[in-house]
Each structure stands twice: as structure tokens, then as C-alpha cells.
Image 1 (cartoon, rainbow, N blue to C red):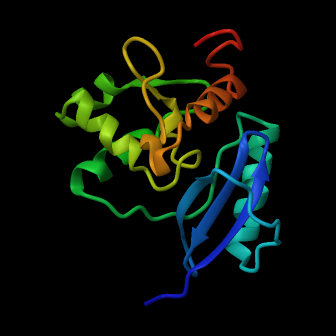
Image 2: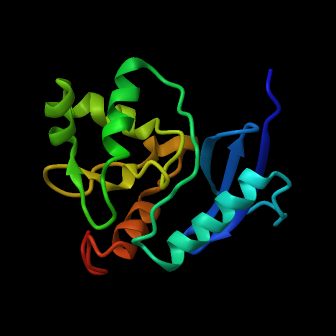
Image 3: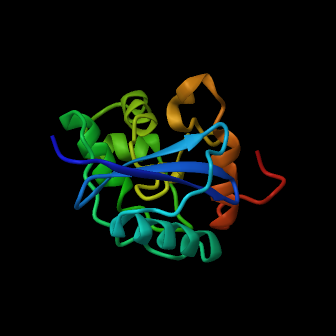
Length: 162
């Protein structure tokens, strides 16, 4: 089994933990409580830290990090579509479902299981009416405030919306 490296960092919307192997990012998890701040030991994680900070300063920043997502064939199709959504734009679950011949509910399920939110920008996928969900309520927590922050940051929704 390959060595895994991880570190956590604080961002304007909350804390995240990033996990990578020697060559690729594998996960970005939102944390309910910040962990002790540390400097990333691996060069890829140092670059991830810099790129996440750059995105938080400039919503038009485009990530250039190498990543690998493990999931079903359907999830891979959804994540490939999500990865093409540019900052400041959204797609509806229905739009992606039509592109890959699926259903909006199945697309939403795949979005909720995206291992690299923000970098593979599932926050840019919204419902026909409203924002939809975010991060599949992992750990039983409501992560929607993060989705709202990201969409406001990118100028997609106004502060008073939703």
C-alpha cells in the first residue's frame, strides 16, 4: 500500500483536512472542529495549501493539482462533468443527468460522495429550484453554510440569497 500524507488547515469557511499519496490528492474533508495547525510535510500538500489559499483570495483561481478519485463508473462520469464547471458558473443536477444519461437524484448522490470538494467543484451543482445539497451531510452535519460561502465567494449567489 502506498504511503498516505495528510494535513489540516483553516480556511475562511472552516477547517479542512487534505490527504494525498506520493503523486495525487485523494481527499479533501471538511472538519467540524479545526485540528492543530501544522505545516504540510509533503511537497504536494504544500502546493495544495498554496492553491487553496489562492482560491480563497481569488475565486477565479483554477486548480492545477494532480488528483485521483476512486468511485463507481457512474460517480466517475458525474465527477468528470463537475470538473469542467468554471468558477462563477453552475450546472443543475438535471443538466449533468442529461449529459450522462442518468437521473438527477443519482447525480446528487455522486456529488455528495465527491472525495475532493472545492477542487472538483461540486458546490457548483445546484437543484432546479434552490441550491440542492452539499457533502451528503457527512458525519451527520449540515455543510450547506460552506456551499453558500463558496457560491457567494464566486459571485453566484448574493449574500441575502438562500
